[in-house]
Length: 421
Image (tube, rainbow, N blue to C red; front, top):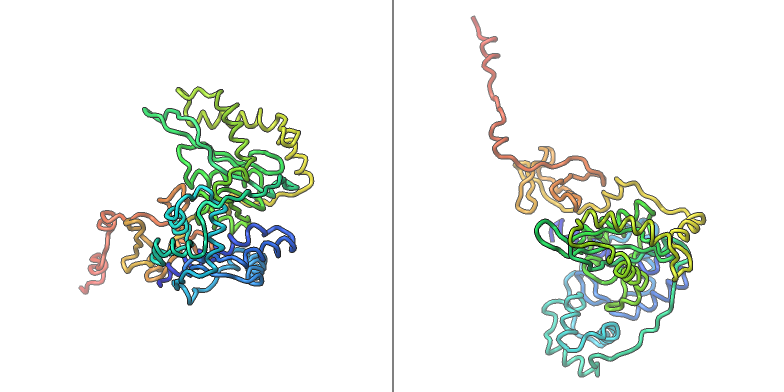
């Protein structure tokens, strides 16, 4: 395993640990113990290792390390048991049973097998579908066992304790000569119902989510918890890693359980029923849509009575703001946290290769393994980072410019001046 692979594995393990402790990061000890005991009885898929179980004390040690040293505190060394596989055991039964309870949409053995493969609970080549089916039958595990999931209404005590985020598929508008579907990414504060972040775009990809979350943080401060579904955009390292560094607990709802995200889903219904009918989508541009939505949000949604809280969202937010002090962060620091990181060794010709493109590096870095970072919004602007700060901006290699650079090995003028008479 090379250095870049070791770095990625340490990142994966740290994010794995953060994902486990996130739901109780800001809970009392009693709630933490109850949660950890529940997880201690489960088979858990560990990156690079496979299925494993952990004790309550292990979970607590991760929590303690994170609270003392933050994200860096839960980064482990390279595991010696990496890559070891396992056979199907009786411990696997609970994992499969819980999956079937949480995912009533699964109807066949192959669907269940494929889902466990995609989620990493089963490694490629670990065992065949036929072996898996035999195991289910031998252990009397039946597909589509339905069970009602009990649910209680909840609301956080203060603002910024819990933010819910999701994407909404919306109207088609003109983009040049063709029409394209729009997507709204929105974040709602659980206590006040204020929409702390929003961004309209032509896709539901990571840049839209990052723009939404960064805008929300700069305007309203840092949340304690960030709650979303299990879509790839929400579970990727690109969003989980910055949250881990910012001290934000990342929580995901059960698969296919939209009702657990009822507040953001209700807001989207309000948008569809009240805001969208006001839009003339035959002529409106994306920029105009953004402006219209911002005005509607500020002048109507935030200032009108919300039946769920029996007062206007912004009024409730400002009232609670007198009781708490939001956590703030500088824009420059926030931008750096969201940068992507790659590792490259500088070649003897003072270049590094990124996506099959060469970049020039100062001579002093020849032979060194550099940490390079770039902003998702500007992937062409790549920086060398030292001590977690940008030190040098790389520039694309220009072979013709280098070929034309003057290089003088002898000074003929000096030779003539010192010529003996």
